[in-house]
Image (cartoon, rainbow, N blue to C red; front, top):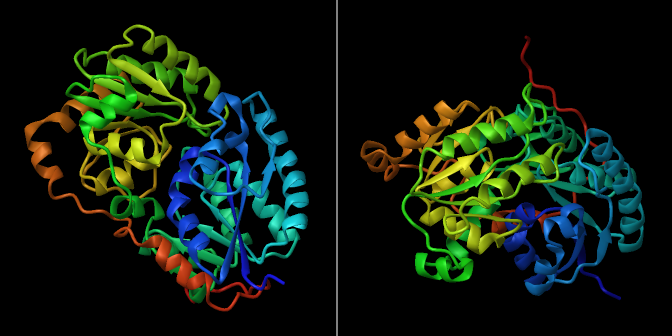
Length: 389
């Protein structure tokens, strides 16, 4: 009989899998633990590159696949996808019977998994809780998952305090840093020449890496915001521009169409990719002059690599930002102005002093130590902070 502790990790997207990679490796290598993987969401979608295949190429076994992503990206379709996910996770968890489930972040796929785990009375560990992203409904999902979880692995001390403010007992909340930064000490990044070979693209200077996701709680349409972004990028006619496509959020398909039209204007200078993988993506961030858009990677990984970020709009509003991050509105003039500032000699000098706010690249080892401690009880008491408001 296998007496190892069964730890099940749920992953629904390329970005999230990349952040979990080294934790997966460390669990798989531990003789006292048995790794289980459930792939869901965008991993199983041809439109998003069937990225579950990369998980298998990396040497992992996928123990269950939960199909849940409908072909439409309307709010109704996303809501129905969540319902399908809960049903699928109920069956998968019943079959796998894990001792612990680990989820990361705030996406609707992960929300479905957390609901199923809660009802199945399986202890849940949540990574990257306590953060804010006021421009997306992910904000509410993240905090809801925190209330369903027994363990909390947060990326900074202010986020640890926020999870405690939600009523979670301090002894269950651990500041381990951002697991995505583990790649900076454990993954061999590509040189500029190697990147040009694998992308089959000459990387001129300046080099922009662009990721823009729909702002699901914004007043303006995502299409209008993307058109403003591209209008701002047009002011840099000599730049190489590499897009990564948006997630499967409401309005994401329309953004892909706008990106594709822009790329078609100059395939030598502009490219777009469904999935680059963590090694190529982080290598691009290291080589880039500016990261442009509203991805959390511009706030977490880019500062650690001392790369400038132009953070657009409100999607990441409320998150801690290093000195390398320049905020801009979703207007073409402000975007272009912020990029010019990021390229200025004065700002390039300032970049050298950038300090990471999200740890030092040892999150996976810290998480693993806690997972091997005695299991937390399912039942929790609400932790009251003794302050009057």
